[in-house]
Length: 386
Image: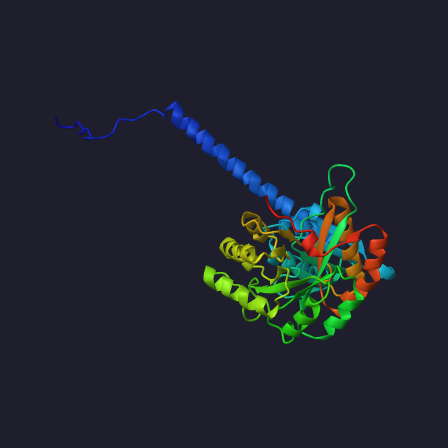
């Protein structure tokens, strides 16, 4: 009819909001409010945390930066420098998964932000003998920070009537000079020497040391982590080798060091973390009747587990003696390993055939023995899995 508006066709009917849709809207709003609140809280906390870090002393600062990189306070130990110098040494015992690069950069940045300087220095052995070493000034104090792939202090041995604590000491990297043969003669015969198979005087050193009571190990070169310089040298065990090549390289190394009673790794931060490579190495060691000492150049090492699975007598290093090649640092490391031996009954220390290390041990080991610690060759501490 004229004057009447046409009714729209196919127009959807109006719906009243349901209870479910209202609940969803309320939940979305609540979630939005929570997210905004969280962002505000984090924004407020971050400056406060940065203020706490900026105001912290050297010890507190190292603990906080280590925590951020994945290392708890139970793995960080502090010592005052000897001689009244007023400095502090922090030893960070990195756990598996520790973000080393983040930690080093954070320490350097923290010092820089305070107008100070902490810099990374070379390690005694690139590729794992210690993970990092930093020295400088932090929070107004001279500091030295050493990062090593070590566990925290060992738990006390259980039971009563335990025998006197036993300590094995191994000196790595023999073979670069014939002088080591005369130098180690000043040490007790229980101190073992690990000979590289690819150094200029390896064969001569191995012959000279292998004819006496001192235990000799093959210091087997293994693949380090990225960036190690110099590398492990020719004949090293590297990730990706086949079973036959692993055995061939081990046999070639043992021809240079035929008197070896056991094997420990030279470098090997990457190699000892590879299950297949370690499994094939342990198979070869079992056939030769050799024991294995895991130098633990990385907290991610699976070497000891592979040795146990293959029923190879094995142990692992507890303390590095000379990440810092200075008498004070070596004495401090000796105190730690003696403490470990007293707590757990046994301990293994590894150092280098460095003149300062040998001179310090020549003075300190007789004193340690006089205090009731038994010095033994490594073969006395390796355990054969049942």
